[in-house]
Image 1 (cartoon, rainbow, N blue to C red):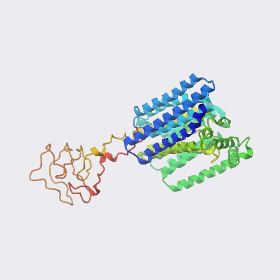
Image 2 (cartoon, rainbow, N blue to C red; image 1 turned 45 degrees about the vertical axis):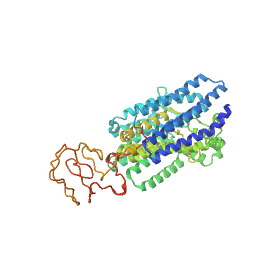
Image 3 (tube, rainbow, N blue to C red; image 1 turned 180 degrees about the vertical axis):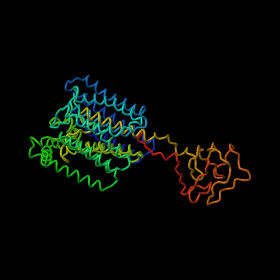
Image 4 (cartoon, helix red, strand yellow; image 1 turned 180 degrees about the horizontal axis):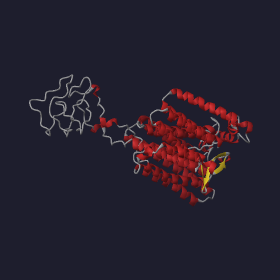
Length: 550
């Protein structure tokens, strides 16, 4: 029975991911009505629940077959499902107005993470569930903190000190792992300070680039990037070095708004890579292993060679959960976890996973594109670039697209530092979204919308609904309005006293506040239907529609 369920699950997983991507794309591309967007978002939640049920069933059956601790599996898998359910409820109530598609994407990535980590190492999967629950508590704190505007008023010197201090921590409290000195050991805890430097660095660059252009600000941003890059180079953290460089590259392009900077930035990245290859031995080893991993398959090319074996061995549909041999992949729970996913879930599933990461990246960029405040726009852009760059670096390294570097796959790889930093990133992004975009108003069905007669007028004071009488703006002394090109209608011998029933639309223009509106060069005739028969947009409809939000 277990074999049959595992065999069928390969196709079910792919089918669920296809539907998940389609529903998310419908919300992103079509910008449907609020009712349709809620339908797509809730459908995604159902797909996540089905993914969880299928995964938990396979894990429990496998645990029962292997005579494992079934009670422990029930407890921790239930804690995972309960934590996601509670976080979804809080997102829909306490954090109303945040991006629903972002929440759904993160939940799906976490579901994939627990599934593959439990297959690789049960104890590590349980530890990952602990980190997940801690991160759910942390993101609520971040969202509550982001309700205040003081976060955007922190002096730039605070971010400079924080960035420099954290990146230097491994020299003060050293802990070497994997040939890199980018870990710190403090009070019994081991963490990677560079994961949190990325956040303070983006706040630093975003603060500088939100001001009016100045050469001092540009030089300061470049100097900070160069300092952090040199420290990471000494620590042999090549992945972090690449990520910081790309963040600076794209945020500077958005600041300068010059396409020439894209070319110059690319040339600078290539030049820096060439110099590192010539003068840094660790970089030379990685590049040589990337160019020809088979020449030194037992040493420098060991990781990339076994990664490729796993990807090819899984085929298009994968071997099925617990049916492959991903345990032979080195560092399979962190740096090379994408190869383990490819072997057990298949290449088609991994292509859909890449589309999910891309979709999440494009959603962040969409919010950044509509953001009016320069500081928030820079932050959204920086976090979007950080998220996608880290994803590209690790997937590109595992598939031999670029030289392999030691970074984690967001929300899938095991690691407390990575989970915490990515959680803070999502919390800040969601906080900016909620503060910048008000929740979408309840929409009126088309068949219940009042018919519009006459041209749409700007709102002055309090404006009555079209076609109905109601209170108007502050009364003014009656008299002739400003001279129109077209003669306004005659009001009769005696103007109506203020407070009396105003005339109906199409017969006589209403009074609008202190100053009559200006209709442009040629005012339309009152009572005449607008050209084309289309209803003109109301000033209240100018709010940017964001159907992705709760």
